[in-house]
Length: 235
Image 1 (cartoon, one colour):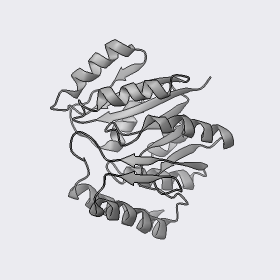
Image 2: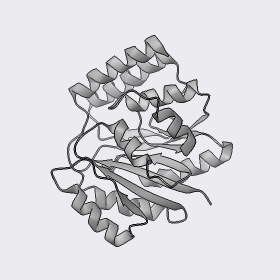
Image 3: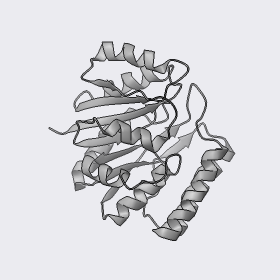
C-alpha cells in the first residue's frame, strides 16, 4: 500500500492549522499518510498549536519540522521532504485555500496512468477560484498566460501549489530548482517537462484564505517575473 507524505509549510496559521489538519485526516482516512508541518518560526505560535495536534493525532502521523525563520517556500518543501517516508509527496497550503477532499482524486488520477506528477488546476473545466478580487485574478491569469506563451509547459495551471509527486520525481526536480518563492511552482513543472516526467491534472476549486493575510506581496511578484525571464533564456 503506498504511503503519502503531505508537506504543509506554515507561517502564522494558528487559526487554520487545526481545521486543515482535521480535514486531511477526514478525507484520507482510507490511505496511509503522514503530515509534515514545516513552520518558519511563526510569531503567532503556530508551532504550539502544531504540538497540540501532534498529541491528538500521534507523533507518527504528524511530524514537526520547525525552522529559524522565513527562508522561502521552495526550501520549506525541501526541508520537509528530507524526513518524508512516503512513496509520494503532496504539497498544499495550510490556509484552507486547498481543500483536502481533492487529494483522493489526485491519488486516483495518478494511479490511472501512473503519472509522475498530478497537479490541481483552477483553470480546467469544473475548477475555479473563489474569494479573489479582480486584481488577484488578473495577476494569476496573467502569470499563467505569460508562462504558457514563453515556455509552453502544457499544464493549465502553472502557478498552483496543490500537487502530488512520485517521491523520486520530486527529489530530482527540487534539487535543480533555483527559485525559492512564488516562482518555485512554475520552475518545478518546467524542470519536470525537461526530465520527461509525465504530468496529469485534476480540477480543483481554490478558496481564498479565511484567517490571516496572504503571503503574496510585491517582492514575490517581482521575483516571479525575474525567474520567468531566467527560465525563458535558459530552459
